[in-house]
Amino acid sequence: MYSKTKQALILRVRRNLAGKILPFDKLYFFHTSMEPSIAHVFPFSLVLTLTSGFTEMIKQVVENTTSHDAFPLRRKDEQALKASFSAAAFADIFQNRAKYWAVVPTLYKSNTVKDAEGNEVIESQPAYICARPESRRSRKKRNRPAQDLTQAHQRVRMDKLQSVKSYLLVNGEAYRPICVACPNHMEVLNGRCFFGGDECYKHLSMTTPAAFVAGMKAYKQLMSTQTPEPELEELA
Image (cartoon, helix red, strand yellow):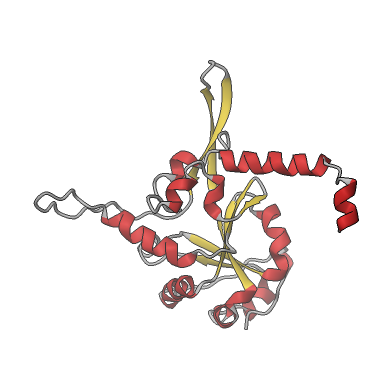
């Protein structure tokens, strides 16, 4: 049974399953007691709860995994750790999924661009959020546009693995719900966008924070400098 809370369990997803059964290439499982460490280990990452739909996807991948290995932080512990590790390590996660976080490191790449005034700024765009299978499109029917099957299936999978407790870590700062960090978040509310879609790679830039996020920061700063009025204090 996987009960050591100071260890992280890693699931490497086979290439033929990543983006098809499970929309990720690799998952790191952290016990909830280790949550404060996640932002230090993976400051750019997706932190997910194990919803029932997400857990079922993980089970399908684990069932197709035949090789297992263990890697300690200190080399001298390698033999002892490997001897105690087996596929049964996932049993506790499946039985007590509320006690674990699934973490997906995201990849950001930086490049220099020019702003509207011609000044050079460093822009950081996401290069990896989730695994994406090869694009497939359905045949056109009369008077109907071709449908992108990959995006449709991706949306179903991504919807299954998200919950209100899941959050996005950007430079160690948590954004919950996930899409609040994106300037396109209103499209999510209207059902025209979803996390993990192509739009994420265009809009989740560190150089262009959403107006909502900027407004919330300004609001917190304003409230921290306000002095309560005497009349309100007397009524309290």
